[in-house]
Length: 331
Image (tube, rainbow, N blue to C red):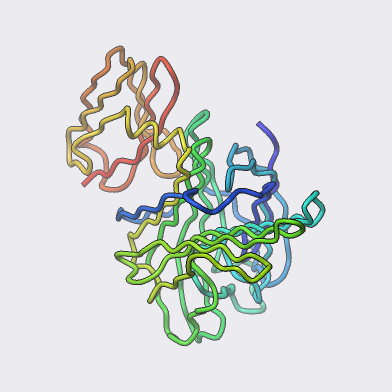
């Protein structure tokens, strides 16, 4: 796999060669699941406060955005910037592009005191899972909002290797100033290209946070606009998960069609069925730490997980074809 660069900031920046059309590219869905913080993740800037500096780190993940391969990730820790994932490439044939993955509509800040040596608003990341179906999780903890006396946001962005699925996971939040909401920024995905194409493509979420609607818009630089941009009425509630899956996606979406796991959530017994022969099963916590491993040689298996603590886990399923990973909830 290629080496990736991840730099710190209020924005994670994703590099792609983008000239895809917006129409029918991403499918949106949402669901709820308990929010779990990742432990033992790699801290950006070793956990130092992040007002306006940058840091580069290497990660390994194969991921595409709007159909083109990720070259690097950068977090630009600038308190005047938006948040999320973003990348700008000015020196390609069509003049350049900027791509953004935006999990909410606020300008963020570090809640640390100016004299602090350790941030109380840490940004961290971790790759969980194994092999070709790993997930890169980027986590923002106790994040402040500009122009707010005190606010605390907790959220994650999950990037699924190979399937190119993007998920926003929302944790507990405290927002003390309703006027800090940035209505001029979307929650969703955008693609901006310069040069001959000169378009802005947007996937934005609108309406109630518990039942968001997907809006799509393409803005051409000749003034033509198709579709519309939407905004959410509030910050998403704890436990909400917003998913953007490319229509071409394989990996997780393919796994969902070939793998059946039930009941999920469960308090004790977990049944696993796959169209292919299951060779091995691995249960890890959300941070990727292995808890149990089982040998198997059947298309069906039953596991007793009654001794596990309540929470979210990942189950790795190795068939005679490939590894796949699913989320399970222990009640």
